[in-house]
Length: 93
Figure (tube, rainbow, N blue to C red):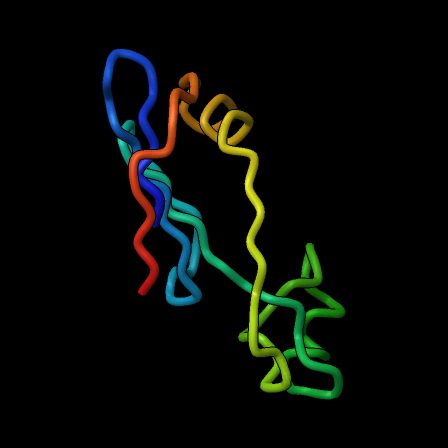
């Protein structure tokens, strides 16, 4: 998760996990499901062809690293109508 400072000294926690089934939010918390492109010829591959965004399932077993990029200013403004100040902390589990 990321703890992000916004205006008025408030902190918003942004969490990502492949265990989350859907997006959820509160005024101080955003929870995003983290899904990867399906491995070729996996059971998830056929599902992803019919999925809305084509991203379903765990990362392919051949993948050792995942790079996550996020525009924090845009995310906070769109989902919470807040203004980004700075990143307070990151916790990787």
